[in-house]
Image 1 (tube, each protein chain N blue to C red):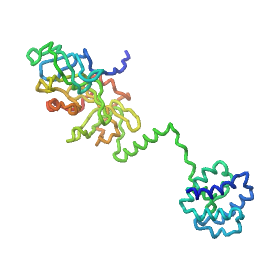
Image 2: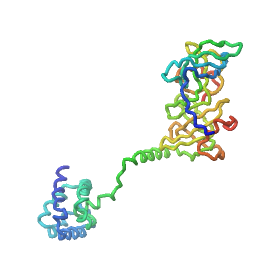
Image 3: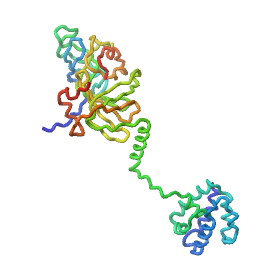
Image 4: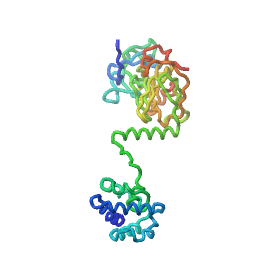
Length: 231
Length: 129
């Protein structure tokens, strides 16, 4: 790698805008246009001699001899990194393949936006949610839905446990989005919080819907048990 | 009157619990939570004193008994991220070895009891939450 970088470095130095006069720019653009239809890997012969100043000829040949497609891309990346600040004016004018300079433009992807530190959790959560959605899509569940959940419990291991009840709240937290189900079982009110994207949940089905005018139905705890009973 | 949501807490000394088996007691008051510095939770064992009892039962008022908490108003987290909470605090009386004194259990019980090795209570239960 070092040997590949070195001739590249040798070449990048003269590409400083203060060192490279506009005349050189003319050289480069002429060369690039001439060679644009061809991939640079096998192009060395066409570059013959006439347009090259003797200063650059040896170095460019050396570069092309050593580099293969990968090497170019890597060098182009490195070149792009180095040159972004300095030589962007110089290389901006050229287009297409051909020169190592214009290779760097071609191989360099459109400027990727930097990932800010504050966005990382959001991105990770989104990825995890998408991965879970691919395995098993979750229906849209809102407060007031009467749902039936089939859960696989590692302790039970026999059948899937079925939980039915009304959704009294939904907390959105990325992958740990949870819903709270309330139901009266055998005379006693039971509330269970389920993480929606849990792999243990085998099936979620919305059975019914009750019109509610609230996002959290905690008032049901104080009301008659009849309101939380679901057959 | 604005009511703030009550944050439920552990079962500790002086907590009155409902008895949900047919051992004869109706209400017990917790004297000691056997495990846990702050108090007992769902599935833990407590030492309790019988405060109210049916006239002809296996236990009488004033007796000190052990009990297993089968329903707690405080939520208990499960290993898969879910939580369960009940509307009341209930206990099943057991003996020193952990075998229930009564022969029937009323109401739902959580399957946390299986992990705590209270299999007999689970088998007597009518409904496993």
